[in-house]
Length: 293
Length: 293
Image (cartoon, rainbow over all chains, first blue to last red; front, side, top):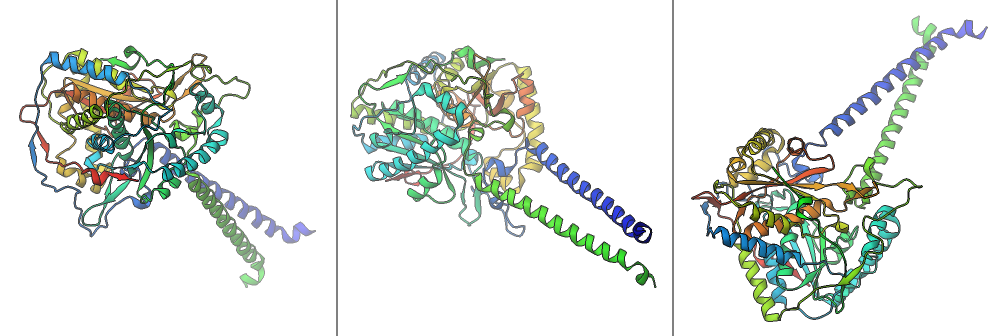
């Protein structure tokens, strides 16, 4: 019989099969453990995440390279220039600023009334006073007033936004946007006298050529945009905070920005169109956003 | 001879070894391809990324469930209340706001001089006027004045920051921070009369119980913090924009915030200590941050 003559092959086959199975199971298990370990550590934030850069760009200096901080290590410290105002004045001013900001509305319909460049320059200067991680000031403001460039920007964004609305954003998101009457047609991109495109710099370079990490660059730039929006409003102008989803690379190329910059926000700035309408939204009351302890 | 009798075993062993090698190489290759595919798609932003939530929480409604936007679909639109000011006044105001903000400095040394709650309330109200993705207003401001809670917060942060500085942040980061004379000892957490802990809400719930996605919640909250910082300064107070790295979960538990909230920033607010020093930093000049086209 076949089995009687060749049984050692069958036995060897079974043994080798068992070894292969056990070996494979061990490999899979090892893999899972690694993944689990990674998952567990996700909550822990590392310099790579904070500086929002690729692993390849982690900026870890070579061991032999001497580390030099971006600012002099013995940076001079000077007395803070502070004038204390009275409590009464402080209460008055805090209320005044709230009343002022509370009149601000996001505007989607602009007139083409001109705005002097000086006002825009002051607004950018105001935004430039924002705090940033380790004072890296990781922002570039590209201000576009050329109609030719505005038209190209509009073309890029409308093309991408049509795909966003129709395919990428999904039903939940587009349903949530319906009350705001938005779609992929963005007239404001050519109507407003200025488009401010805010780029975050993910890193830069120190004077000695070492890569300078920009810690918390995303948060710093968004925070600076808060000052920018307040400055626009304080100067008597209006703006729209827009996030051109998935248009970043094409707009960076158009505006010839370097690889270390990423588009964060786009704000048309100017005067509202005549008869401009805004959705009748209310803001949450203080007791909905403030918890005192 | 042993080999002559048992050669089929040796041959079988070699064949099985080859099969195992080829099979393993194939698996590894397949894995690489998957990783590559993922990498390529990273540039495309999806609702999950924008709303900054886990896949499990993607908020995609069941097919049978009717989708209802967070605001009424026929939300009324009303005329914008806008009073145009003169160009001259606009220039003057834009410069005035820049001059005001340019006096702001991040302060690390606070006095314990009391500040009326009314001022803090106005400051939070001002921050609450910020724009947000689809008007989701995804923020909670926890204002702590209780010394007991401030002490617990300090304990959590100093413990975690010691590990951050010594182990997690790495040489590059800690070297870059040296000029700012910071370390894991955070006296300001108990010195300042108020700690404002800003939480971003990653999602919430609509009145019908459906999950409400908070688009761009990270950016919206950071932007609101820009208004907050401006409001603090406008009211004649000082603050420190701090990011308690890896302390989020412990502080959320301490302050009993729900699972949909994540700590974004912590700002001590009050008056500066007498003889408060600040690093002698300059801000980038306008031509370094503004590109006109």
